[in-house]
Length: 170
Image (cartoon, rainbow, N blue to C red; front, side, top):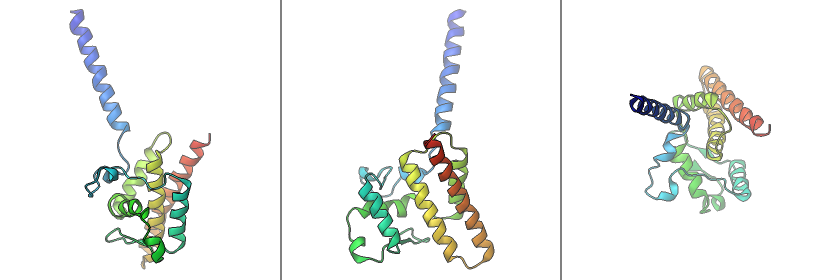
């Protein structure tokens, strides 16, 4: 009788552990794990691995780089910058990983609000890029109602980033 009891308790603990781990490992950006390109280097891609790459991203955005909402392509007006090979990962992020529709961005922001602990570096980077994309969408929208919806989404993303940064420095 006690062996059956021990087996049942072990099974229950195992099931609880599996359920808890699946709950907490839900991906904020699930498309990062199913990137359309065939190379294994682009599974869960990340752009900013060094300070130079962070500076390059800043330079791309300052030069007027923007993301197309329909196709997700990254447009860099500076020909010299757009020809850099290091931007290939950023292009993959913009085309295949980042959310482009309002509903996808709202799903991400809701996931960020439920997030416990600090974000992983890849998720933080994608959230900042999503924030940039959202700011660009506000600028392109004509309707006041649409701008207000996108503005509220931008605020939610900003608050999530701010909370993550404050949590990191405690």
